[in-house]
Length: 196
Image (cartoon, rainbow, N blue to C red; front, top):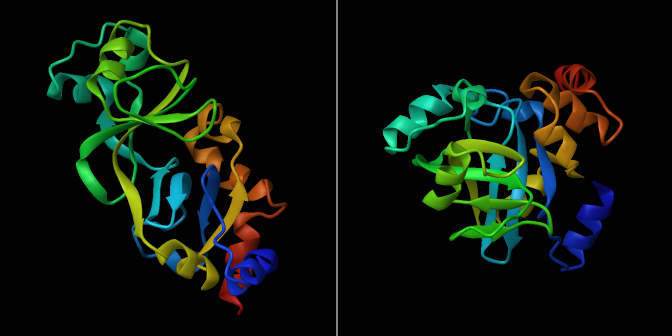
């Protein structure tokens, strides 16, 4: 945190693309309470991220029906659809690896992309989609300078993302695993915040 604040004060703009944002206890009652958000883009225009640890009461089969695509892969039909964030909650986003070659993809890293085009859904329905994916409705967005301000105000902890936390762990394990990347526990964070 100190290194971030030092660079912030020196006028350098940090880039949190490819990082996790872990909601601090102060965000407990907000839509971001106990969330981990993967930052897909961060520049001088603002930031865009996907919440990776909050499910909606919606399965992939139902979502695919709503967009008139038949999901033929039985093992995917009951997969959860995630709450990606409070912006454009009627729009689907697919966070995935490998990057692949889709019509409308934001490249996050050499391995990870965020795709909004229908072709990735069609590929998933036929079993030729990406190896790993998180399907969301909505995303988290910040205007220019907003994320930097929130981090400086200790609303978020940041750590370089580990893709295995997003794609290989059960949803309920992702918050603690993300905290583990910075050598802390969310339960301890709650205790500290409660006694501050």
